[in-house]
Image (tube, rainbow, N blue to C red; front, top):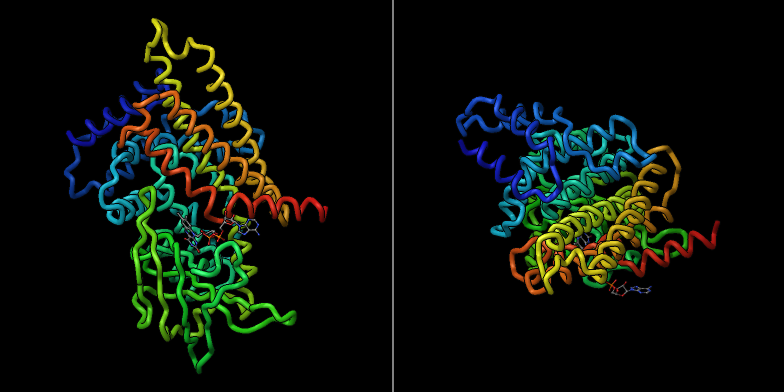
Length: 440
Ligand SMILES: Cc1cc2nc3c(=O)[nH]c(=O)nc-3n(C[C@H](O)[C@H](O)[C@H](O)COP(=O)(O)OP(=O)(O)OC[C@H]3O[C@@H](n4cnc5c(N)ncnc54)[C@H](O)[C@@H]3O)c2cc1C
């Protein structure tokens, strides 16, 4: 029986100690009958629903956090189970990244997880839930984490300010995994310096005509729609007035001009808009609201980049602990050598500190603090930098084995790098933190 074998394999390869939890997961799974594959969609949901209540393997750190409600703790437990069963068995595969992303989208949609990335119309997104889910997914598959979060990044501005019918159309499709979203801000000459965007949108009757190009756009070529930021004029201070538009991938004049090959598995590329005519109703908010909408999106999602980094770092730490406890050199386990113990101590301490910053920022946002700019930047900066150090040390503990293509720590070493760059580089986070501090 395929899924039962998959379940055993998943549990065998999952590094966290399951203890009694393993038996409970397996016995609840055993109660399910064999299900023909054509009905797998429905069954997966049922199987997940059953297993979700097994409440087995709770991460101790999460239970100690003062920032989480009982509902969020349940979500964290459910996500661990879900990831173990649905994501982990195929997580290391790096074949056909577009197909894998689509598979993850449908798996996440089926289990109802995508709903946590897509905000309800006009409502705030639960940032703690976002962080818990990203941490759990990134622990196993950074690509699954990307599939999840892009549905949110690509729709957040829409959820806040698009006209009702445009908003409802795209939000429901994104949450159900029926349409894939993307967020298109960066340009060849406008990376950190968002205000220097050159893409223009000019009103022409019932439409806007958009011209320009965007690069490093995650999901380019896979996405069904893009939230595109363009200049619509100049503001009172002579600065570019940016506006946001929903652009369907099938519109005439819209083109994915290049797919970019990255260090890690990540669908990404450049898009070109040549006289791309977009209905005026696809303007998100008012003309000139684009910068604010982009910054609100960042304010909501930035701490969650830190959460994804923590998920990856946590996995690297678990792999390192396991390896150090099994490999012998000089007649003793690596874990018995004090220099290795020092590394492990630094790794776990940095991880704990990173998670505290992440959940503090998420908690503040969820409890209605209007701006969490400094806290979210601190979380993103510290967690992504710390995760890079932790993963580097995990590779070091593995010696040559850590560099073998296809090993978990080797993949994490490549996966983590982008997180110090996207959604604002570490340097930009430092500038934000200092400027907020000096204003306070
Ligand atoms: C994997 C990946 C996915 C991405 N996905 C998306 C996406 O979906 N949508 C999107 O719009 N963008 C996306 N990006 C783009 C990303 O947001 C930009 O790469 C990032 O903002 C940096 O811009 P840049 O690459 O042009 O670097 P630059 O802005 O040119 O910066 C180059 C270097 O200079 C430093 N620097 C810049 N300004 C200053 C300053 N004032 N002081 C000190 N140092 C400075 C930077 O920190 C960096 O180290 C993605 C990028 C990557 C790598």
